Length: 414
Image (cartoon, rainbow, N blue to C red):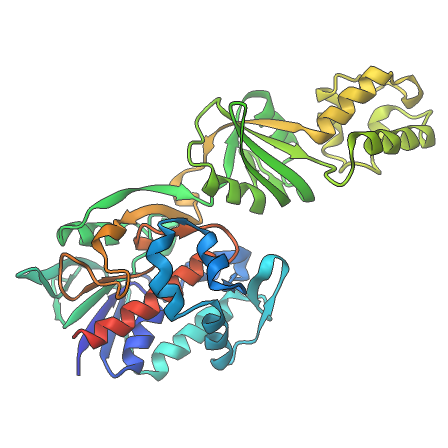
């Protein structure tokens, strides 16, 4: 019986460990947290977007970095396999907008419990609250690991599933990069991805004034200088530092050079209306509230906390009555509603990123097995690898697909 150690008890590590044990290996997970699956618990705002109910081709299209590396893993264990996997474990799932898949309970903890049942029923041993300090290697092969007590754990294969460098409080502190370097691997510089954006100057003050306001069904365009870099439709959230929400997180993954003073976000508050139809709509509202001040007449069109900001940007006195608004002022208002612009100063710190872009170079990992090309018996899976995807369940699918492959071949090659 082969013996395998999995470093990290997150999504990828649990899938790898359970798979290897299912195939007859003696498997141990070493997890630095007191409980496994800690990062899973906070994904999808605590609901856990398990995967995306899409085809293999659509999945590959949504992998942002090194998509070709994922061909073997996703064809071996695709999105449909993930859905069946969890439902076979007794976790009912549902598909929502954008083919995002969630547990019917809307509880991420139920996903963790399912994965824990998977590893426990297959006899995986879990050592929690213990940190791996180094790999044991000899003649370009891995022999085991050394923990923080100096204890040596010998095995036939080691699977590194430590995550990236985002959300360090969940245990993703970049340890896997250290282990990979010890085995001779190159690390692509870790950067934040799927991360909120910070705004600057007066636009930051506007965001603070609208802090907590969540918008739906809005259009978003991201510009680098005058070049349109990204376009989306969906939800957005204003915060004390700038902007967040699904459209902004997706933009951060697609626009890789968000540098101070060059990037801006344009929000179309009424994407379903042309400027002509929007003008007609405003005229109707102004006629309806013709004796009111403009600040008290836009409530049918805009959220309350946004009205002062929009009026100010349009250059209209908030006390001006609707029947006194000029054609030019109305044109300014329409322009703001269709191009509500925010200058971006950068992204939030990497420890606030949902995922990490960068990691162990894919050139040094066999994509058909997830085994290191430099160190026999050493495998990688999940976010520690330089592969990331857009929001929508694709990153957890990367974890499950690579974890499944690493767990399988760690047994077959031992």
